[in-house]
Image (cartoon, rainbow, N blue to C red; front, side, top):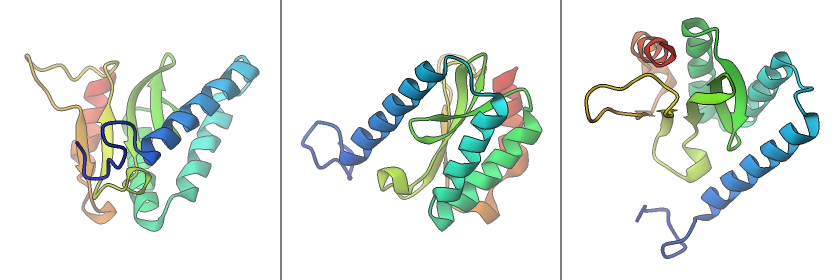
Length: 148
């Protein structure tokens, strides 16, 4: 059980909030029925990044810039209330701020749409602790590989 799990085996308040964010995103997408442009989705992501606390915002801005340069074909979108980057509507990678889940680090994660397969086991999430020490080349290489 995670250190921040205060619900004795159920969902934490942070997890419940993320699920509510995702449900709101799905309702909004259904109401739009494709009417929102990719530019509007990108603006939503930038607005969400601007709302983050200082440390998470600095990390999210760096990650966003790296992904935009390394994989311009990925479309920014919100996913569980956090910045994500999709191909053909499927999230390839995402940023999760530390504050959102009261974690000691932020996360750059990859979903199954990412082409990171390497044998029978490979990493799908990476801890990020400080914007100044992000390895831009490593992230760019991972994202480029994920896009294939």
